[in-house]
Amino acid sequence: MITSPDNPRVKQARALLEPKGRREQGRCLVEGVRLIEEAMRAGHSPALVFFTGQAQQNQRAAELLRAVERLNVPAEELSPSLFGTLSDTVASQGVIAILPIPRMTRPQDDGLILVLDQIRDPGNLGTILRGAEAAGVSRVILAPGCVDPWNPKVVRSGMGAHFRLPLIAASRWAAVAGLIGVRSVWLADARGATPYDAVDWTGPCALVIGGEAAGLSTGAEQLGTGRVMIPMAGPVESLNAAMAATVLVFEAARQRRHALSLR
Image 1 (cartoon, rainbow, N blue to C red):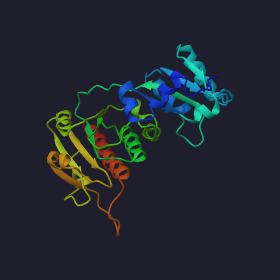
Image 2 (image 1 turned 45 degrees about the vertical axis):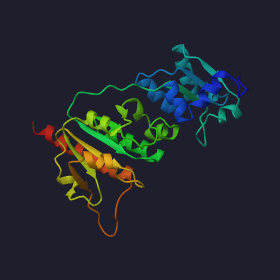
Image 3 (image 1 turned 180 degrees about the vertical axis):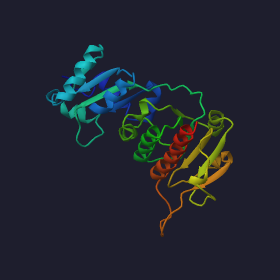
């Protein structure tokens, strides 16, 4: 059992709690049995696993540790107090993995691209990624100003979407434009002129969702070819970013299913 906070592996893992450490190592922390299972099912093998004695008493966690052992992945037991310096949850299952950050390739298709602009809340970003995967979004591009998608809170909220959904972080809007290519780009805007269900989402297109606090950036404004809005009943002015994104991407999914049924 490792008890010292100066242990090199523990120090390396602790660095992954910060964006700089994740960038430098190209790795992230994934906590919880289900999330680690999801990553492994998607073909992403851990580089290292930490666990507590309590985890060994849980059947599912014990099975995960045996699966890790069969893959010859090193697993280290930590004291509860030391494990707590890495954990980001209130009621931890006692299992944390270090995983290489997946390198997603750009898919060649005509699907919907979701662009996220200044989404800074980890919970919102994770929820958006989860909904995007469920709706069959082709890929997600994070424009400048978004929270690090590999923040442990974002990973937890994403419920495994990170390991299956093509996810690209762009440092400049010029790079975003290059990744989108030539297609219609709709900006989600509460003051937009076009209702979301009046848009033809069946062809190659992109949807830009802005953050609740910052809204749409200048880069997004310059890229947009139209503005789409969600009509509201009563005095409600707008939905939060995650809710709006979910409504819009599932309308696109509905239209695409309908178009396929007519072929």
